[in-house]
Amino acid sequence: MKKVGILSLGCKVNMYESEFVSNILKNAGYEICDFNDECDVYIINTCTVTNTSDIKSRKMIRKAIKNNPDACVVAMGCFVAANKDVDIPGLDIIIGNKDKSKIVELLDEYFNKKEKIKRLYDNEIDEFEDMYIDSFPGRTRAFVKIQDGCENFCTYCIIPYVRGKCRSKEESKVISEVKDLVKNGYKEVVLTGIHTGSYGVDLDTSFADLLEKLVQIKGLERLRISSIETTELNEDVLNIIKNSKIIVDHLHIPIQAGSDEVLKLMNRKYNLEFFFNKIAEIRSIRPEISISTDLIVGFPGETDELFEHTIDTVKKLKFTKIHVFPYSEREGTKSMELPNHLSNEIKKARARKMLEVSRELEINYMKKYLGKEVEVLVEEYKDGVSLGHTGNFLHVKVPKKLPHNELIKVTIKEINYPYCIGE
Image (cartoon, rainbow, N blue to C red; front, top):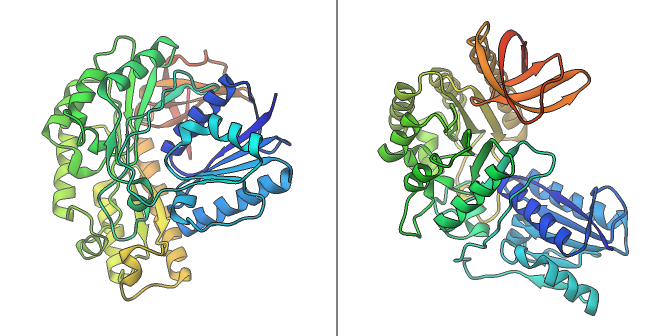
């Protein structure tokens, strides 16, 4: 029995795909081991969203080769799709964002012929690669990949070039996968994709149609949307969020910049007035909702004044958490052609300052729940403490053993950032 170690870098879509690869390898007779173990096969599902992601992808490929020079080392995903000329001695199989579901056949071919395999495509990927998972060992939160690809072409982003155009999983297959996860005991399901809210643009359906069917699945207690653009929170989607408590009190809505000037340079599809109005509309139907966001600081042309304007913007919007990214130069993107690029020192300083703002906003939101009863999905127990998350994504600690994978009523007694302490 061959041993295989799998490492997933980057987004939730990669995590889902790596879990799928793990499952089909297990079914084919491979033993799934820790990536740090000495294995016969190493698989790195790579990421290229930033320069740091590229560096880490290369580092992990080299680490696998060093772990066992005789192993078959596989690199798949966005990094190799963006860097088609990648040539690392000891790297044996290279596949981009297509053919991940064919990993068993590719490994069979490699072990039979002992020849390197490179499957990268210049043409746009135009078919959804079906994947299905009914179990996530060790996890209480299940993920379902419903969509792939992006056609927004934000000036800073390489992903549309490596993931291809928007394409969706058939609605019946999504519903079937969620039903099977619920049968297997999962109370919370997270819908994920590269551009999740665009679901259905290539099918005779829409994201709202899918949500409407999913919230009716018997036994599903929580449905979470991993991330959605503000432009896709249309009337139909908001009506379902308003009328179904199955959809949790949390949305992750990327803003990316807090000034109209920078939003325009980024080729984002909205201005601040639209964004503020949409957030107000969401809070009118879900007053206590937690709204987190992604934000890039140090974008070319972002002056000190525009950065301060961004701080003012995020405070006014009262985000509950900000995922902060210093602008990363990516060859092949339009933003590389823009003037007034900033130094790494300025970008890092702005990122630190924005993270302080995020912490302040997070704590303010947490404090609203002091003395209140919340419902926590218990995820783990260690060192005498049970940990889990509420629907609105408060991370809660309770100093006693609670039943695993159960929804438990907890009263919040104190805030010890980044946790709420409950009993």
